[in-house]
Length: 348
Image 1 (spheres, one colour):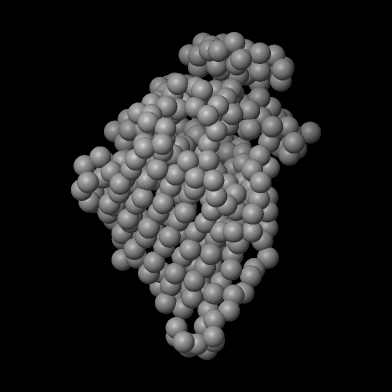
Image 2 (tube, rainbow, N blue to C red):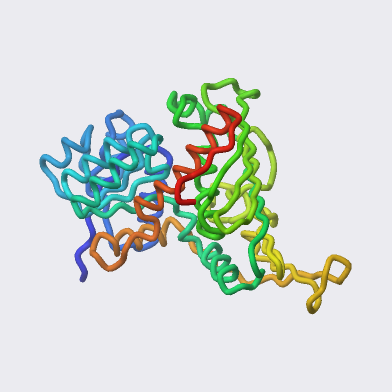
């Protein structure tokens, strides 16, 4: 029998508990041997899953050396937690965003590189088989040269979601908490982003962070994109409602991304490929081909990948550098929304 990979969970909130649930239900050859969370709820959760409890990673590392750490703490302390792991040379799966600030993220990425400590950033959607299929279709030239992209991210968060104070403060908000996932997928499917122009509003809730935003994107390839995000809209057009990857959300038959090219267009995640007959044009008949979809919980796939990364059997699909690139786009969006200016990103 193989030896189980020993993991520490830092942060016993919603996403941290989801990681544990996934591990318990999927026969992954790993065990959460410790929980780091200073709250009483965190201590109680450690008792529930029969794990050791520590208030901080520093306390944990003084007496234990897990094979890897899952960092699922509030965004604002990701860097502190990540640097603790680097100091212990312990591989980490750090939830997105890698940080709330690009300069801090760069500090962590460089420190991890110098210490030869792997970082896997939790952009779990890249591990979704639907995205892998879409990636292959685009890169095989099925829609030709990509020219236009649209992403819709509309959902409604209930009042109780905002009970934790950090979700109402700068460093939270749908751009950083949610849209960073969509930005990461658009980068993965369509290439690096060259510039952004954005507007945001907190008109509904009035918190210190936005509740709605619109974004114009220019990709290094020359393709142009639009994105609309709001956590105050009741709609079926978001990744959560269309991908069926998380059982906590009801599933619709809609899509949230449209990727258009010179030979056809692809809607994601329903994987409908639209083409005219022959070499057709806008007056020619057009029809869709729907492709069979493989649905496996991407958190399961990501966790298995993390274990492979821990044991040097794989390199991170979403490295610290990749997480930083997506964060740079989000930071540019927030800066543009504040200043009203177009923001250009270095190196696309």
